[in-house]
Length: 426
Image (cartoon, rainbow, N blue to C red; front, side):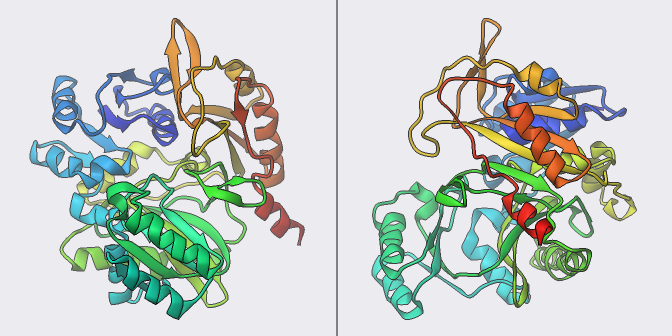
């Protein structure tokens, strides 16, 4: 089977690594790909938003299956276009992808179908939003309704912070077009976790739960990022809670989207918070999370091409997922200054030494290669993932591997997994 994987980030590097393990794979093609993805397949420099170029490449390489990694081309309808050209494509339609790309749509859908989440209101007028904020008080959550690369969420602890956030989103357009609408949402208190479901529009199969660290600073401080590390499984998600989430959240959402005439064929990511009232949805994504992918896929034993093809063919109910009973931890190595201003172009050394630790994979999130030298090219540079017997030992191994890698202007969090360790200690 020839597979085209669209994307270039750490998530797609992990997907390429997993796809390459399939005995069913003939050849993997990646567009645009990355130095990390080039270890597993042939890369062609085609922008993810160049849908015509992506389709032409799929025709050139006779792709039997197309897998879409990032959310932006899904919002633009890349899956619809590939399907119209006769390709088997694993990724939701633009209409179904609105579960992520339009937070107003997602929250309205959840309230219509009784899927547990917080109260909310959506505004395009800043003064109306401020009246609502003053009525509700703080803490409160404000979100750019559209896609903002994981950074369009402001958790305001005071009313003044919330009023400033309204201006940031609606007046100053800090998040560009993503902030054309501002969602003001009830603050939900509890511990967060992520659940991935692979769907054919009717049924779901699930991967192991995970938890990521969004804040740039240790102790969950500072601005939100795309994610500074993750671990799996998440101890907060007990077997009982897992079953509840699958039934009341994940499958219910697939059913709701089907009832609305927009069946979801792809990867549904549920961002959950476990409150005193039970699991509540913070957000949905229409693709795998990053860096959660880097700890979830190493614990997936089932052939991922079997899962992807079942999603296309409508046979997901026949898939039996097998999971590794060990644990995984991923630490993101970033450029100092991320998520705002940072420098790039620094040589990277020691990735082979890191993987020599054993059960360690170095995934590339923002790298370039020049004359055989690996260089930093993004805010999040590498995601170093380790698998071991349990969460504490997986964390230790990940940091041991991180210690083998050097590049100038490096920043990492040293407390990845702290919530799991606290919960396990108690």
